[in-house]
Image (cartoon, rainbow, N blue to C red; front, side, top):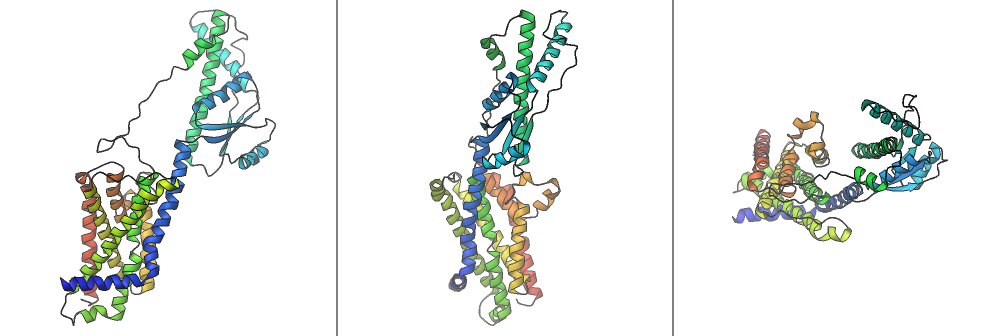
Length: 429
């Protein structure tokens, strides 16, 4: 036991001398989690909580165009700002940049007259189907004007999914305006008087309510936020980035002949390997403690959602140890097969970034293209992320986490055997 303690103490001293590696292991992930969580939280707030600035250029000015703009306002997604209808498309684009508006809508000239013509035509056909002969303001068989399309100008940085949502909102507002025009024309044709406002509101505002209920494995209805995803994600990234320090440590011992000298001492190489792993697993747990503490104590003071830990802290601890051990095993594997410190640093850092990209750290796994799903399951970071997601986003328990922990343990076993095989092949043990 004393030999193991001495070996761990040796590893700690070596690690603490490398200030740059310590900065990579602790400072870099702290900056990443704060910056990326802030960016994603702002995007989510813009979509979910805040209204999106929208410029409205009404080149028609008729009754239907005003009703269309009023319908847009009632949707609640947009902060409408009316601008001069005489602006050209180029001036409109410049105005968008000046007002920091992501979207601008142009209601074309002739919108009201075309909509009126269309509603008269629909009314005439409907009354004819019912065998009623009612005189309309115009002949329903006359040539119907096509409603000129509403133009939507948008900033290219706008995500396609959100742009489609805006497009759907515009279609909904236009459909509401057309239904209103048809209803008014039909009532006027049948009763020869204008549709009362109270009846119109009663008919058009009969909204169906959809009860949206988020569910999790623990039965809770908490809605996850940017913090719940990003803090565990970048903690995993930080764990695996110890490959820079750990692999160079292993390469140094190979180059300096430490592994060979260990053969002459009354100790076991397995003990030295265990000391390295225990030391760096403790470091990964320290990373978890630091980054999670930021989410709990710092985030509320910088206008970010507070990190809410899972109720089952025992499962969280076991998942953190498994993820840390997996990261340590990967670092040792890279160190064993790298022939120089430059190879260890270069390949180790780049490979972690690639594994993070395909593993669901940078982009959530559900957003990955179908062609990468098989490749994604090879990444150890994917299974680590799935285990944390089960706890943080789904409120799962240990039995739910086992599906992700088993692949992690298999990956750890494979990397441990590959590292020992590599050391034997190089006759270092």
